[in-house]
Length: 619
Image 1 (cartoon, helix red, strand yellow):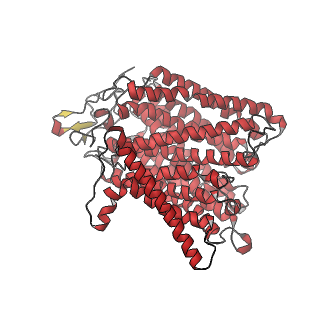
Image 2: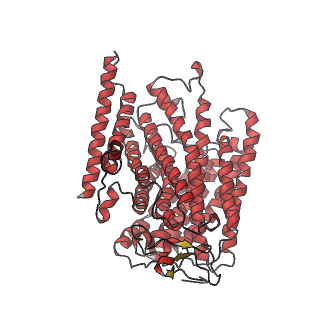
Image 3: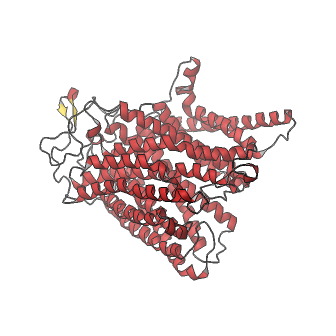
């Protein structure tokens, strides 16, 4: 089969190349009088060789690499489901590849969270040793961060953005496929870290521990640098696609709000991801080449790592959140049957977040020993970024007000974003202000705040997007009753779990530690039971998606009677998205405007089959 051949080819060439890289390194070290085996160096060089071999073997050589040497390229035309396991350049296939991959990673990370909460259910639990707890906690953290960074961008961004702007694909289809196929390498490399001792440094990998710990740190660094490369290439692709491939008539003022969110996110990914990569590359060089970026005795500075790391990792919060806010606004306006309130101000909010996100990083470092004169300015800029975020929320509230709300699963998850992210924003004020942050830093208050921001905001938006675009991706409808059971179960369990977590944080319970004072055992047992309930809430979702994809009722091209271009073609869309090139005439959210049509297909002789007014369709 095509799928087996493609994956086997990638695995085969990847493993062969990996061992070739190791052998070359060992031979050169022996030739120059060194011990032939150095785990960190040999694995690093082997990884680079193996990564190239994997990409070429999975299909990049035939469809891309051959032309570098003047040879004719070819591409495997895999039938049906098998194309999801090949180097396919169709943006819709890539979107589903991203979405399914990261949902698998999401559930794996969730199982690790169950391990964490099992350990913390009792103050003196021996379910996990300290080292095992560190490894499980570190793996959970980095896997969930990866999901938050790339699930919406890679999944819905790749699938929906080209269709929403009237393009037939992304600007650089082969680069798009490359961006995805770097992800499995990241996941597999992280999953091999237990074989080299396991991660013990959290997802932040602070030195000096990360310089001197076991060799799993090197695998971690290489995996995340690779993931960063994927993010940078993806961001570049989205920017070029949105600027140059919009349909005639689609001015910046007629761009769907989700596309605006993706555009600003792509700039963040392109501008800031290098920070994380550089920070980890310095760790790699310290480990394999003996450099001293962070050794104070040799002129280095451990705080340098934190500055470089957080210069990316706070903008990364907006890389996670902005696409979710785009989905949130997109769903709310369609399911309110109203024009998006204050559209231009919502766009301005996204641009304001883009502009301010790079000057707020150091509020993570108020207790790190950085100069005190930075505290005041960083406090101010961190508070300022709530202003553009507030514009996005005002846009949502104005859209809901007096709307004819259609409370289906996508809308319920979108409304939950409004509630959850607001709670995350309020608790964020305490962590932005120096006096309260000094007390709350590195406690479970931070865990609660972060989960309200990322899970409560971005992950709830991810599920809103799944239910919203599921009919378009599969051509079938999901079971609405199961979807609503999933929503209410997840929403209640999530809030009970993480709202309660503020209390032990205020009491000073440290995060990332496997034990705590016995006086906090009762509240932690309650949190653990709530967390297990939250984990179980995804069972109806998994069953609903699998069964509906195979046997759900046929959805039709536009079950939501929405106006944007992706709903004006068949479900799933044809190979090049449109039967004839579309022309954009009116705003995508002109619900209730007589005679308004967003997209036209002039060569087909008829307007797109969007509702002209859309006053209350489907309620």
